[in-house]
Amino acid sequence: MRGFVQFLLSSSAASIAAAGVWLVSFAALEVGFLLSSVYALLGGGGSYVSLKGIMHWRFLRHAGLSRREYKYIKQNLKEARTKIGRLQKAFLRVRSIPQAKENLEIWQTVRSIYRNTKREPRRFYQAEAFFYSHLDSLVELAEKHAYLASQPSPSKEMVESLTETRRTISGMGEMVRKDLHIMLNDDMNTLHMEMDVAKQSKERRLGNKDRRLLK
Image (cartoon, rainbow, N blue to C red; front, side):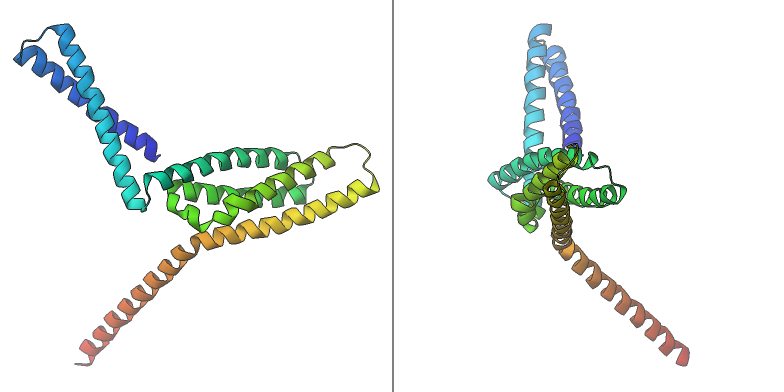
């Protein structure tokens, strides 16, 4: 969404700048049509690049990230997106309704971590364990479970392996839920503080009102 807004604003500014340059060149300076068009393209392109760079700089400043950090996080998000796609495919191959329900809950948690990090890149540092370890393990386990479950006439060892893999997937589901809770912990603390302030403010207003009534 942020990228689309940046593109829209930059494109609008570039169009206005290009039109302004063309009019000044062609009408005021009496430059030829073709050369005026060239100037307009250069002016519009310069405006687009400049405004996009300024907006990106402001975004990084607001996020408290350097260009290098943002590039690194963006690369990790790109890799995570591919892994989440693999996880979804593996989860969709499960036929058991209880397992499918659990898989959906795990996948929604994983997607929440990804979306929150994409929206606010600095949250990456609150979920490093998820991006560096937990997501990889979850994808490998889900793909292994889906492969074993698709085999005809499973042996006793395969059934035991399926059961153990499923149990481990459930454990990994708990871990990614904790990852999400850690990521949202600061938000919860801020919310509680705001609620406490609002409660105290309300109590003061009621106290002042009671004192005025007693007078």
